[in-house]
Length: 147
Image: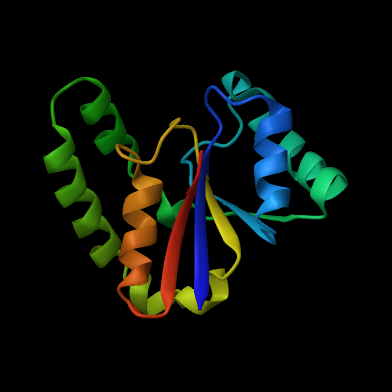
């Protein structure tokens, strides 16, 4: 069984965030944000996050921008120009155009956790990404959202 985790850092203390990762035996955090260096990210700022992950839980780090939405899609959604249903369709088309399921093997992400900023997965592309990758082996992939 392949386990894909997802997590958002918004409204989580650093303690809660890192304890969730450790408790679930996450081996690598896969950052799926467009920009991982925002000052607003606090402990989840890319360069700091790499250090904290290694020191606190001996967890690896990867930043995969292929898994992020485009800046245009994100800004259109935030501005209300597209609703969530349309966002889901555009993101799915983007994953297909980027050939995600051909270029990335879901098995390579076993015990990995997809990181984004959204507090919960319902309206976040990290959930859509995990579900997209799950299609490679639906009976073998389990998705767990860490909240």
